[in-house]
Amino acid sequence: MNEAVLDASAILAVLFQEPGAEKLTDEILQNAVVSTVNLAEVHSKLVKMGHGPNDAWVDAHSLGATAEMYTSKHARIAGDLITSTKKYGLSLGDRSCLALAICLNAEVYTTEQSWRNLNVGVPIHVIR
Image 1 (tube, rainbow, N blue to C red):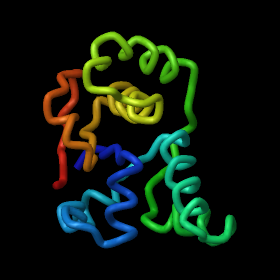
Image 2 (spheres, rainbow, N blue to C red):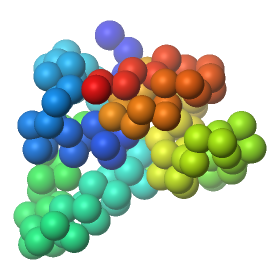
Image 3 (cartoon, rainbow, N blue to C red):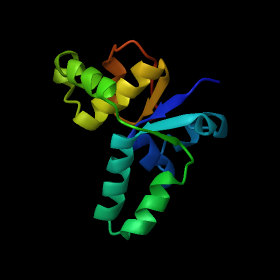
């Protein structure tokens, strides 16, 4: 199986055992990657919820997804996506996730319903 890019929302769904988390099988998670931008989102969300920073960092990594450094190529693609995704209200984190998937030609997993309508050249799986 090829790499699967996880959006912050997908990671949080697994961590909190939310609906749709079961769709992220062990096989998918074993091949998962996450942008360092999305890793920061997960970490920030956990800290905001009251987790200690060290525990939050450990939890953010607990799925075993490989953290992929955010590069200038990712930044360029994320910036380019602003026009085609504007009507969907995607954040920089969202576009960074998609940029990584585009660079890797990988599938993306998210809980974001608005992504169902995106056409950015890679398969997008909305898990709930």
